[in-house]
Image (tube, rainbow, N blue to C red; front, side):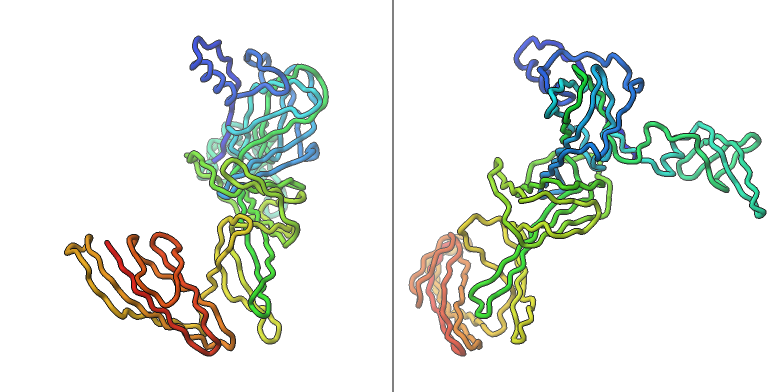
Length: 456
């Protein structure tokens, strides 16, 4: 459904009390904001926006673009463009913004040139030029219907468009017809139909001149994730780790030579009442290269990619070069012929420096375990929720590999437990988890026994 969003700067009377002053200030900040100058009392636009000649601000005026991408279909776009303003009121058509822009988040700022600007009104024209949208704009207006007969002769007849939803209804001079035989000719394109998503800005400038304006806004249709490829060494004791970051862009616009930053963590957001338009998915893949810079951002982690990159819309591209935490690690090992074979994958969370990461790659074929209970003795209590017992267990490990292995054994226990005896010392991983590390010789076996006392 076509969407048009309009935000108008409203005057706010001086507040009689502190609370009202805060409310008034918040209202002005939300609806509009003077840029490059001090706050001044707002006034209604002196001239109708439609009466002001519109200046198109295309990608060719773009000086820089920065994109901060979050995990959950969200990005912050900062688009810097060079503009020439007249003193007084100006109307700018900021073309090729994201189709999934959240227009209420748009913020315009003067970054250079000493421009003193007050934003009066903004419109987001999402109604793009298509045959269907053009026909709908001509409901109630006259078009030409052009037909050709079998001999190639063309006839032109005028008709008024009565309806353009769920089919076309045309009124000719002597009849009404549904559908179109031939093709339609339109005298012009309505001003509110755009070939690209456009944010129309009505603003006042205190002086004439050229300078840079930065438009920032939140948009849907973008996300990122990290993936890793780990190649095990021949002895399995080490690995080479390469990382990729995948940027997804289905926002409807490309961001060329963008400075990209990635935020790891979930930002709280208010649910939108309307779903975002469905579009196909584009990606940018990354090869291993220098690490991005990392810094803390509130309760999140912010990563800055080392160089600008093109984020194409609905397209897969390559060579960003960023290894990042929080992703899927896919592990490969070489066979006897030197060919890398996939041996498993696991997901990891964001991991601080000098932390150990454990990967579960699958079930071992050559190392097996058999666990059995060897004893049980009730100590006290009669209720299923208030009693104590003592239980003994034995675990036999076998290793068919030609080299020794170390096996980590995990045992989950109720919260109130005490190890009475054991054949090897355990480590208390948590209140309900005990672990042992058992060395199993090549082509051999090892056993572990323990006696635990539990109180429920």
